[in-house]
Image (cartoon, rainbow, N blue to C red; front, side, top):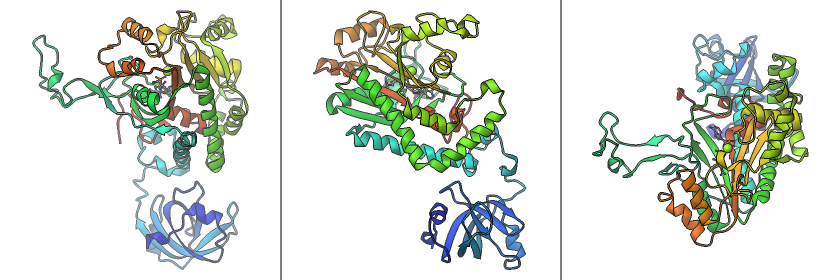
Length: 479
Ligand code: 4AD
Ligand code: MG
């Protein structure tokens, strides 16, 4: 019986006039005891269901409340109302599930704030905004697989539980089955992980890169797309404790090949979404424009969402070295007028305010910064001949900051071992990683794209908590 339903998206696109159809969905509004706006999640557009006056039982009509679920059968007719071509003249209405208007927390009339919607994230899917965001998130995920599949990359599943720290930054969530209230101890007082599930200390992965390199140096070109976890205590609109990352890794690629792939990839994702989710994007563009009207003039973006995406598609990303980036910052009016909160000098790990200056004020487009100081980057990056910098590349995007981090990898065993020693990365535990450099080592490169930051960029949502269905951030793990 349920298989007979037509999705509202298909119905609105079809020429079903004068046909009998069955639709099912949730009530968005009910006007004049007669006009039901019904939504089933296939599109932001509702179908109007007309319940002719006098035709239906009063008791039934009372149950048509916001978010009640309905099954409606009726005739498709041309609509007299504005904004829609067709509507459904109801023959039969069945309430599948009631929704008590007294306790239903989502009153769409008052435009609930995004902050409030985060508190009821289990219901926010029923708003137009999150319908659009999560349909686009789906499209992006699909487009990622399409992009790499079309290029012959192999989708590699890397482990979620590991015993290593791929980034060497120590921001890991521990995985254990040891009883916290009664930990087994060694004689020196330290925890005896031999008694733990894996017989040693383990954690959730911060990145699949190291395992990705193992596969890339045999299969040639691979990519991962999975959840990663970071226990960094960053309460910002760009950080999550659990986020998804796409990490391509390619043998026989140098830094420039790597940058070219990353730029092509980002542009492909934008183009694909513009082609497949135009309606959702237009809706979000309007939402963003409305939101920005509340901001002071100098905080508003110069471009609307659609113009921004078009602009990114049609212009080459700027490519500069880290040293050039620091020079630009030092020459900037912002620096001279002491507008930066954090210091600027060669060697700093650029703060968000610096990245945003470069991207939003100076170049006004995405920027790829290369050749960072070795001291502020991970152990696996290839050392440049100057003895100071590494073959790293970060892509900085307007409104987001860092969206991609990547590098050419150090393929020379002696150099890599020396670097690990300097940075206190335990080379004994990473014997398997070093084996790739022992047996047929090749130049290779890769990068990581933060999926939620990409969703933010495409949807224009300013907080990363609104780009993932169930955000995990410090002190927040509801749902
Ligand atoms: O720059 P990151 O730390 O690089 C890596 O993890 C490398 N192993 C990637 C590689 O070369 N294969 O992270 C990559 C990207 C960042 O540019 C950012 O977009 C995203 O992952 N990211 C986060 N997104 C949300 N919340 C966080 N806490 C994030 N940390 C990084
Ligand atoms: Mg990074």
